Length: 424
Image (cartoon, rainbow, N blue to C red; front, side):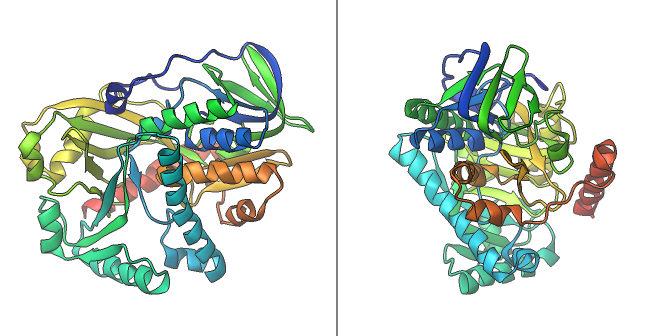
């Protein structure tokens, strides 16, 4: 394991299931999956429903990675805006990517509603511009989505309208997306695991994969056994750690930090007057939302390692007070971190790294929306339905410059530059 399980808010409000047994000995299955997060669990569920013998190998516990530790925001679209995708992928593929992301919302509603997974979903996601010059772009993008993509759920906000919703002097306008929202990600991970097991999949916890033995029937090697399969799905996002160097060249780990205040009661209206989540325009983004029990959940600050700081709370508090200085005397009750995967272009890395080893990773902060759908797309690909997999595989995701040796220092330098630009 790369970091100890921090005392997250999600762990405090969700009853953890009994620990699942580790892998003991060798197994043969149709499909072996590395990673017990959104992508791996969704793939396992859809494959098991097809009658496949499926084994999920999770190095710690279900939802232990970024899937159970993130900000819980459900965005609209891909990680890059549609005009950028039109340039990168062409109009036809950009439209397909938009439709795919909208389908991802439908899938989330289906997975949670039909299977009784209570993720405490709240509609609404505000984009807040922290620089005056950004507002015109945001409003133009709202028009584009409404006019070119028929998406009528988003509307522009001027400074006063935004200030009425987000009680901070640091923003100058933005937009609100009523078709997006936020949820409890750990509850989603736990629910997907239950559904996958009910469909017949087997989940092993404490089963860290050390390497993949490629070949006609690839094998996942662990310390206590091995699993061979017709197909292997790599669904680890930023926590691959030596399992496959070719994937790691394209997907780098970033640790994000989150905290929740104590319940604020009526004081919550001093920072947020709606139940919508907020994500701002910083490259090193601030994101926050109200919790069902009246706390402020705030994410801010990143480090470029799989090793988390011993004390996350001071890191998050510093960023939180930049936005909401009125919370200076407010205690923080939970503080934790998680490791997600980013790519150089912030587009997902979906590829066949060998004929029967497929990967979906590098969501760059969009995994709550995309992870479950991409798990379904991986399941489709194992059955030979490759149209959507191939669409994603066409997206430009080069390796980080300098290879793995220079990946971290170059990433730190780039992120430090953008963090400085955020402050100017």
